Length: 451
Image (cartoon, rainbow, N blue to C red; front, top):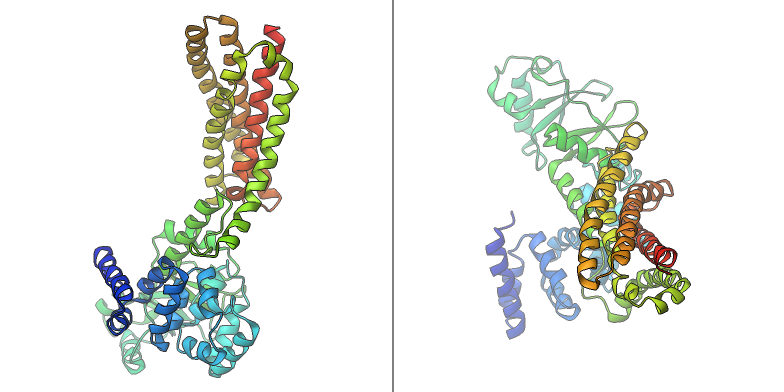
């Protein structure tokens, strides 16, 4: 079963909601169990908790496990909280091992133990192999269900072997070629298997230039490999070159989507796994932490302003123009911060090019600072008929935009060195720097020149 087009999916989900509102449980059950697990997961995340519980009860047990893979962690926890352990074990029966490994990491140990014991010996060993790797590594992302052949057999033998198997794992575009010690030696594309002479040996048809991905490689490297090598699947090997499993492009797309959601939500101090319909108190507590951090930085900026209270009392016009400099610095700094954070994520910045990037960002900050300082100085003079105030705000803007460029460059690198996600904390730190420097430069120059 494959997901339908977005338009049909929207219509289906609208009909399910209508059935729930009108009490048409039988029709809702029929409709729900005919949808793709991803569509059901989307529906569950879009429903309030009381309706979500009702929809969950309408699902057939054999598809519950696949649906659990598709929902956010907070929603998953909500769904399984009241499920008997026996029912949960049944729901997870027959799942793909890589999906099962993703779920088990978030389940209670009692459930994990029973699920593992319910598997046959081969699957149990394969699952333990996947679980032994970090979830953010190639080993944690891989599927251990692979098809392998020897290099010294003919394509005709391979074809007969596949027919005897009866089925191949979903998403198979490549058969991996291994030696007798199960070491990876090459890849046999199905397209070549179908189009070349059946009497040719696998060794003469296989591609040996496709480098496998080490099991301990981070997921960022996996994404890079698929993006730059245009892969549909890739072999995963251990340190000795022994084939462990494969990664397919659908796994990588899921990883890219998760990373995009993480970056978006982290910018506001939120978690992409949060439930949109979580209780009010729970959501408020999660957001309160970030609001508290922001409040502390706001008080720091206010303390800087307070240092120049006498200056503001004497020259009231400074209070009118005071927000301009920090605001411009914040925007300029955010631009640099975003560029550097992206470069870190794509592994495009290192010691060899860091100085050149810093010089470029400082030059951009200086150029923009001079250009907009001229604009602001002219506008201020025309507004207040005071050239000195225009000069003060122009000089402060140049200073703050240069400092903002420096901060936007250095903050992500510093946070990465401290093992802190730049997407999570970079914005707050940058805002503090541009506010403090902006107010200090503007009010300090005002006190120096105008008094």
